[in-house]
Image 1: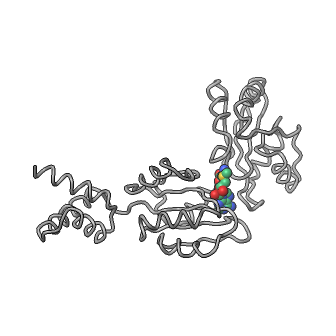
Image 2 (image 1 turned 60 degrees about the vertical axis):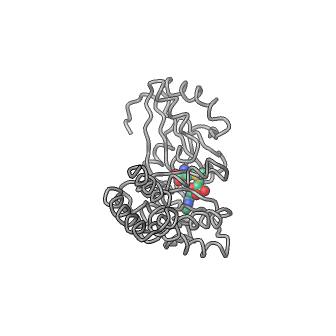
Image 3 (image 1 turned 90 degrees about the horizontal axis):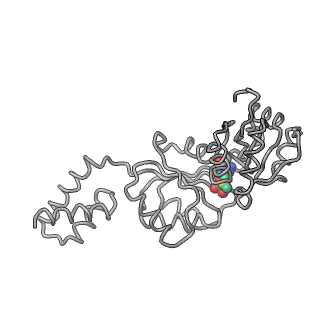
Length: 284
Ligand code: SAM
C-alpha cells in the first residue's frame, strides 16, 4: 500500500477461522485507518480485541442492506484524504461478502482502492484440493433451487475448469446427491472448517462424497471443489464420433448409442447427444 497521504480505500482480508492468519500489514492498516467499515461491527470488534487492536474511531457498519447508501459517505471520506479500511466478517471482502459495490463506486469516482490480501475460503480450499488449480471458476453460493440453479449446474457438464462453490452444512448432502446423480464418477473435494480446530478435507468421487455426507449433516463452514471435465474436447470429439459410429454400425438406436458411448467414455450424455445429432445432420 502506498503511504502517499492521499485518501484511499483499503480492502483488508481477515481470518476465515484461525486468528493467527491476520497479517501484520492488515493489523497496521486497521490500526492506522481513520475509519474501519465492517460487515458486522460486533464480529470485527471481537477480532480486533483478540489482537489488542484499538481502531482510531468507532467502527462503522457496511453490509448488504446499507452498502449502497454507504458509498457516498466512503467516497467523501477518501476524497477528504482519509485512510478508509473495509473488512467483512471473515476472509476477503467482496468475495461472497459485501464490498463489490463500494469498491466500484470509489474506483469510479477516480479515487484509490488498494488491498491487503489474505485469507479467502475459495483459494484456501482450491489450494489444498489437489485438483487442477491453474484455471478455475468460482460460483459463490449456488441459487437454492429453480431454473437458475438448474442452468448453473448444467453449465458444468462441459466445464473444463475446476469449479469452486460455497455451501451450507444443511444443504451439502442434497447438493452432493444432485451432482452425483449427474456425474457419479467426477472427482470432488469437500473442505470443511478450514484453518479451524475441526478442519476436514474429504476427497473422492461425487458418489462417494454424497454417500459420506448423506448419512449425517456436517457442522461448520464448507467449500466444495469439483473437478473440471478432464478430457480435451478436440481429441475427445473424434473419439466420441468413432464410438458412435461403431454403435450405429452395430444397429443401436440414437438413444442407446448415446447412452452406451456416454457411459463407456465417461462423458456428458448431453454432449454425446449433440454430436450424434450433428452426425444425423451430416448424413441428411
Ligand atoms: N469472504 C469470504 C471469503 O473470502 O472466503 C467468504 C464469505 S461467505 C459469506 C462465507 C462462506 O465461505 C461460508 O458459508 C463457507 O461456505 C465459506 N467459508 C468461510 N470460511 C470457511 C472455512 N473456514 N472453511 C470452509 N469454508 C469457509
